[in-house]
Length: 113
Length: 114
Image (cartoon, rainbow over all chains, first blue to last red):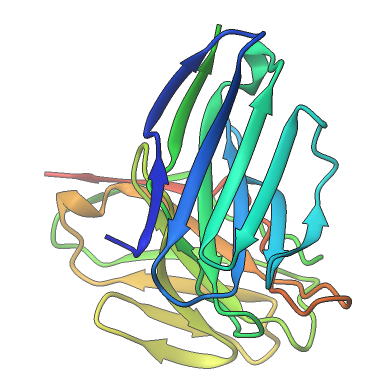
């Protein structure tokens, strides 16, 4: 247990569906991150939130919409995804302005049919 | 952003010491070097971090030469459960927010054999 939880752990959705991924951290951190990990590819940073404000968007398509209502919760809203969006989506948190350690959740394995 | 280069894969036997070297020629003055471990279908887990010389914790040691253009993660007496992907990271801090941002490479896939 890293103190970062993600739900659901597995998700199968059609291309026309709308779903959301949830991440919660119990560590008192104020920075949260979404990463995407596709098969045989490096982790790709998608979004960064710092004190609820989005500070990074790595050219992510608009069909991925993040939301950070407070420093403990992070959502990734999904709509009209493509099969190539199938991947492991990982959430992480860290203490802002502290070098180093990001704590990762277990991830959500997403399959888009 | 400093890019890292590390071997794609390594094999070792149980009980051996494993050294994984990472190259980061363009490391910036303020950058730290961080290593993560990832098991299949799990999120990466922090192993160790350092800035220069040597850092040791209960899990590993990190050796960084004076020029900081490379680093070596040393895992003493590996076991089968150390089979994982190991990532070497050099961070970069966006100027607008100060949030620390990592770029993950492909990592080194370590396989420990019995």
